[in-house]
Length: 344
Ligand code: FA5
Image (cartoon, rainbow, N blue to C red; front, side, top):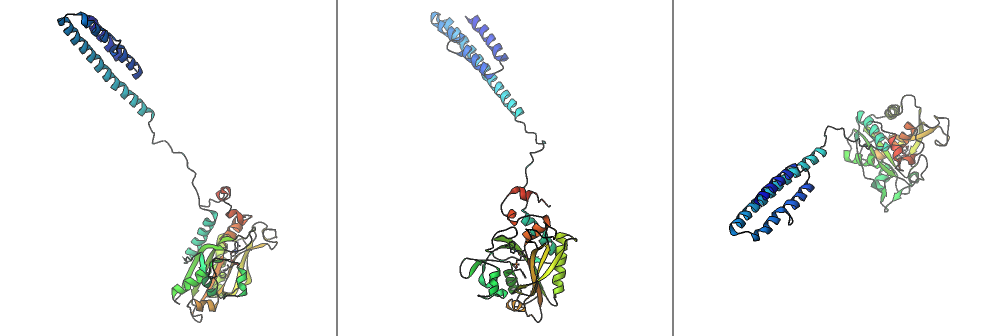
């Protein structure tokens, strides 16, 4: 029996040595150390032996059991390590591989055109001013020579929140706010981009919510020719030398004299179409010399200082620059529209 146990031990160690998988190792554990295994069988015989032989068989059986179970434990660790190594090999991340391309977002066309206009005026020495979108009647109208009941208030149909508060109808109140901040001292040279709101019916060139960029220059000896030169330079820079513009006499209560500037229609190049209402031109801005009363209300002495101001619609400018057929394209969030204008 002792010899038999020795040879079983040798065979078991060989089997364990050759074993390649954990599953197979578990089968060997059951085969050699299980209840029906050879060591248990040998133990069962002990009862028929005398004391000395029983002692010896017990010792050898225990040793055999210990040797086999130690070999199985060692093999188990070895096989588990192999599995981990294999996993590590397969999970290897090649950090040198090029990454997946991510679609990058881009600025909305409105922001792109506003940035372009801002850059142009900053290049001419202007700085950027801001004002609130919820404005008081006082700044939106009264400080601009439009007292309550003035018929010209109808030019800008408004969204009132209370009797005194409204969504600003233009960026011109920033003129008044800037003048007061200056305490009557020039020079002033600002532009103010921002959102404005009007109860206008939406159509190809009108929106109830749109952007404006206000401009204000106040200094000594400012004349209409400064305004004209500035706007001509601006229009040529934005639209190119070949685009036709025209200055048309107009009326704004806060400027005197006042003009409106039109650029030839992008769709019909001036021959007349539905977009330009057959006029051949689309209006992009209103402007004029700051009215002496507005200068006075802003704390400036009109005998010493003069100024010019303008207010333009950047969406209209983009429409004319890129031949866009409808201002509603700016607000309907169709990415295909915006993606055409990656101008950087
Ligand atoms: C004004 O809002 C004056 N505050 C501009 C101004 C400033 C004049 C300083 C003199 C001195 P007007 O209502 O014309 O003016 O609007 C100015 C520009 O805003 C227009 O030329 C046009 O480009 C744009 N605009 C006006 N209404 C709309 C609209 N509903 N949708 C889109 N753009 C508009």
